[in-house]
Image (cartoon, rainbow, N blue to C red; front, side):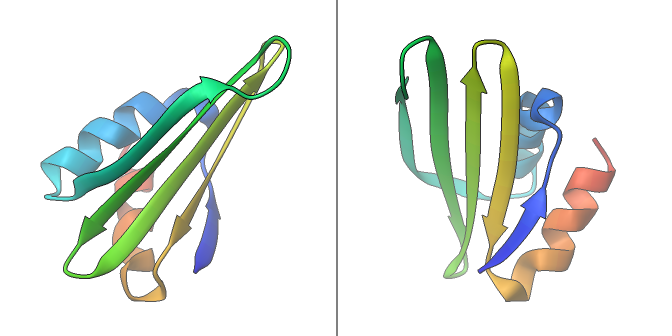
Length: 83
């Protein structure tokens, strides 16, 4: 898997863009990660390739990153660049 950085403020737009690009959510997990912290993981799949979005917000400090199959890394970079 390849790791990509994404601004946490772009996560909602990224989720919409993934749906428009034909990626299907196969798993979602949302919850409290620690005291006063919130996070989620979303996994998309398309043609046996996988993209995972990790998001966390700890006391107002949000962070996000993406894991992607190497074969679709450029497609995901393109989606991120259009946000």
